[in-house]
Amino acid sequence: MLYQLFAVMAPVLSGVLIGYLWAKRQAVDTAAMGKLVINIATPCLILSALNKTQLDGRQLLDIGLAAVLVMLLSGLLAWWLAARLKVERRIYVPGVVYSNNGNIGLPICFFAFGDAGLALAVVYFVVVALSHFSLGLMLFSGRFQLAPLLRSPIAWSALIAISSQLLSISWPLWLESSLSFMGAVANPLMLVMLGVSLAGLQLSGLRVPMLFALLRVVGGSLLGWLVAWLLGLSGLAMAVVILQASTASAAINYLLAKTYVGQEEQMAALVFGSTLLCLPFIALILPLLMALAA
Amino acid sequence: MIADMASILFPLVACILVGMGWAKRNPGLSTAPLSQLLTKVGIPSLMFATLMGNELELSQLKPMALALLGIFALTGGLAWLVTKICRAPWRIYVPGVMFANTGNMGLPLCFFAFGNLGLSYAMLWYAMVSITHYTLGDRIIGSGAKGGKLWLNPIVWSLSVVALLNLLALPAPEWLLNSTQLIGQIVPALMLILLGASLARMPSKISIRPLVFAVLRVVGGFAAAVLLVNLLNIEGVLRGVIIVQASTASGVVNWLLAERYSRQPEDMAALVLTSTLLAFLLLPFILAWLL
Image 1 (spheres, each protein chain N blue to C red):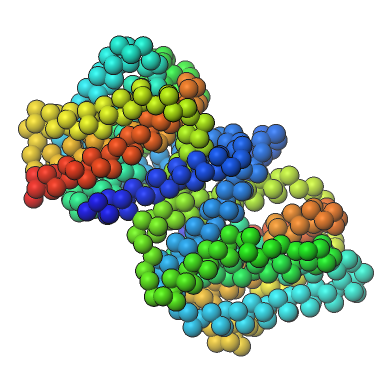
Image 2: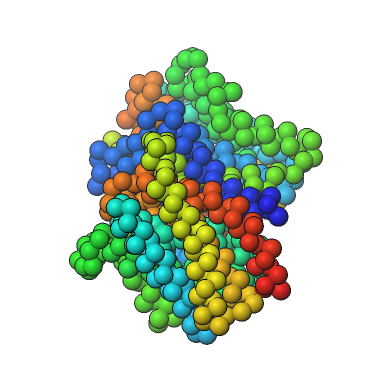
């Protein structure tokens, strides 16, 4: 069990490790990489990932509502904690709210609950991603304005993805294959850049990010359970919501912090810390969730 | 048919154009870290993931190597003859014609045209070409310079691990396979974007001489490949991969090596550019004939 979970998470860890070791050996200029990921690859990835799924109305209501509530409640908790500790909330609020439901959540749900679990997990992932690249960008920029949003290719691609979901349009094959082809670059490059950034981090700066990593993973898990119970979900749906709510902070949070806020080292520590934390934590709760789903 | 062709070629052309536009818009941006990541980590990872993840027939290795030798000999010999006839410097045009762009251009093409199995054969082909390019090609262009060291080449490491696991009949551990797959994902698109970026930075001038050698590279390579796959009775996906790989443009590495050894890099750049254009004009027909 632990080994299979490790096999699922190894790609994330090794991407970060490559960047970390690289930056320890020599100075790495990630300017070109960052521009490529944020302006080209991620928008393509968003468009192609959302194009592959058409959401089902009933699942959207159950799982989607649960995802929205988990985001809302975890955001409020993070806001309160950031205010108490007097740390930058533009880093820690989105860092806690937006979890890694694609890279980590989808393969684990598939591995634990099969195709039926994957279908539900995808709904959770899509709802979080849509909020991430619209409202989430405002959390990062700290202003509730539309104008700066419209300059970002990521927001544009989310807008197009939302409208094509609503109108149930799917791309022609040549466009779809181009989008997924260019989008494939985004995740690995993002992880490597995150590793590069971790190499510059002081150990003393780790305490606060670790606290928020705990909030993301353990707090998220409890909130997932609470929300699923409040909404009257049970069985597989409940298990999927809890699992998706217990995943690490999304890797792209790091890049968004670098673009919109600065202080990206703290976000890198939050992302990496929560990734390390969620591996044993999910291994711990997975037997319970599998019993719940069965 | 046209829709198939569009879904194969459009992503490639789009990536190259993105790379060109990107380099033109940000002339100061250094792409060196990206190409370093690509060659040192991305390509060896993809090599490992595709070779371990697909059931390749190892009995095909020998005809592959023979076909490659034959194509090298035919295209190289022809190019040498033409350089003697029109008194062109052979140390530019012979390697420029022999060493095709089997990486940036060939890998994504074979992936889109022949799927994952095609990609893994194309990877093996690329490995053989690339190793020869950095040893023999380096020597030709650098006229007897020391040449790249074989054991420093990450492709060689990756191939050795694959060979070792194969010899011991061990399966690759799942975590390593997953990781190399994820990192390897950057290779196809990034290779094309960087190809576009280097094409945009090359000095461009149009003249007859590079066109002659570009025709030798693309059309000559195609003819040599068709001849050899028929002679060696190579069938199926491998046949398609060899023909496509042999019909690609002149490799960008030729230009990098010509720059490193100051061997008329402008002439090499003209050959690379002209043959890239020519290859993209002819490839739709070659693919239509193959598929």
